[in-house]
Length: 181
Image 1 (tube, rainbow, N blue to C red):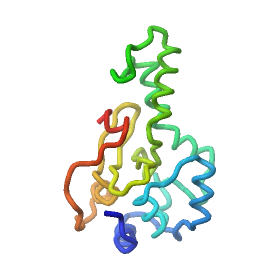
Image 2: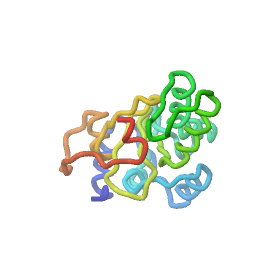
Image 3: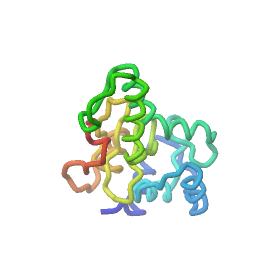
Image 4: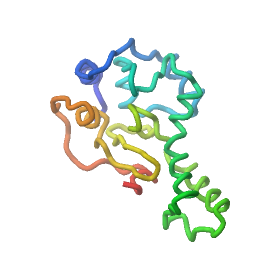
């Protein structure tokens, strides 16, 4: 069930944040082209209803492109950091090479197949997949937690909003990232 425009506006109105004009189709196209991802339908619906700004919200309209690129790269960079510094390794990647440089190469190739995560707020991320009702993850290196089964559920949890009429159920599985939860 896709996030409706009316519900997105209600969520934005309840947030403790300033909400600027929505992103335009041209702004979405420019962001997606520049950074090489596509907002998932629910994230797009939220930003089409209004753009939360300030604090830990990503500034999709006027933000420093290098800072946005860093935020987009942070989940993968964090996993690679843990591979290099903390011995992190997923069994699905095969046997860990003894040399760290080779281990990083294997991990990097595996991460290229993982859906990109797009910042929603702080270190909370939505998968860039063409599906609705995707979870929002809290990501700090390989410490990954489902922080909301859906974007609306996440916003309600993060900002202590009154519960809406949300379908219940388990979070959808997202390739690679759900394996870390």
